[in-house]
Image 1: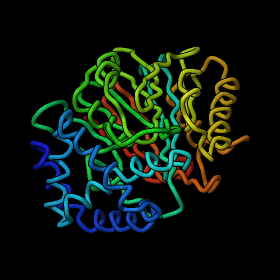
Image 2: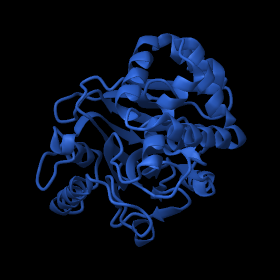
Image 3: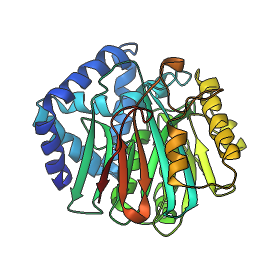
Image 4: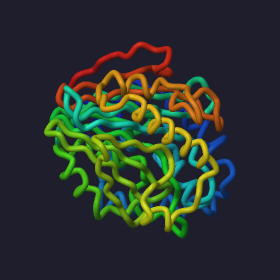
Length: 342
């Protein structure tokens, strides 16, 4: 996808028309079906007003998508912000998907992030590889749902890598903010280093569910962000490593959110990452990350095959110094990675 935001959106809408239309119908039928339109409208309206004022390029890209795939702008907006709308209205509900990340700071290749994308039972989640060449900002490659710019993970031409996972919701929101899933693609396009990315997001109010965000750069930077509606906490590596799934670990964030129904599964995956690191001793390698994201051990393996209704549909390894994304188009336990460089 090349050019300005509207051009990029139109290109995606044309190329992925049928997949976008199918995913939009799925969101309306499953994700948004339990919400009254009278409740959805003001929340969506607040999100759109916030984006128009702070990040108008996001809306311009969605307008291009709508033109390309022949849906209305409203349908494309509901698709892109559906999970944020639902978790704003029903903060105790678990978000439609869950993921996890493990990262090392000091491998032979510098910082490395491994990420699993854990989704629902649908065998076709309507994801796409997104190679983005914007007229303003950094080129990047990422992957995520079709129908808009958001990505699960990405790496840009400057060597900044980002991976995210859903997290608990801060209650009491009204939709005023940036829908949480749109952090990663904006950081990939507009930031060069970890510290710049942290600053870029620091004063941005977010709407909907929380997120855990892993950031690494070619210069050796590595942090994890715990992000809620009106606050952001920075975690730094312990023994050169960081990991997360779908709960918060800092007291500041745990105090202001409601628990998700998949908390036990999330905590089990984090404990499993910890056990794998302990068993590996001082090893901090790309190979260990690849083994960890493919693991099925107790209490809960990071590579999921139905536990809590979750399935690892995609995974990736991001190597900032090499500007490389190794993408698994399936569970990493049984799929060979494809490498993409930017």
